[in-house]
Length: 244
Image (cartoon, rainbow, N blue to C red):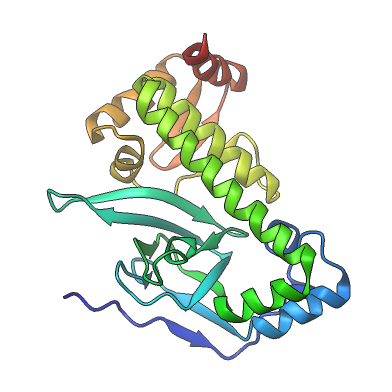
């Protein structure tokens, strides 16, 4: 059995109350006093170097992880031994929800760049949620958002052509980045074309051809991993065509 590479534990205590991502993470809607109580739970911040794992399939589930900086992918091993990418997580999003039902993680979480996470012990979070109704409501909203996102992926894989899948992926990614203060039209992909293909259910060659076609059509400018959306409306029309 492969042993996960240990992650380094930082000495600095993460504080939800002064985090500039607080509106994107669990403390949304909590009072200053309640955020202070949550601060007490987040006693550790971890650094995960690029390419290393935060947790692996089968690891004991102990904590949730709020991505503070960086980018992750989650993946599972397919029957043929290949890794199947199941999602991409960025700053302000949670990792580890997969372990709640069985007390074991059901996927690997791999850093796509040098990243830091805040560790939230789940047992303590459950206890605090019983005291703070608003925290419980926020946590339920986060879990609901993950379910909706999973349904969106199922729609991508079940009914969309390759061009529509790639367009929907780029629109979703830029929207999430825009909420975090980044450009709505320019981004640097942290993941490879192969990883995008794995997530969207497409072959590497198909993803590459689709990017090239979108560039030839004047919808995108593509320079390796640098992407600029030239015609946002055209990208929307490609996605909307699948629902007509």
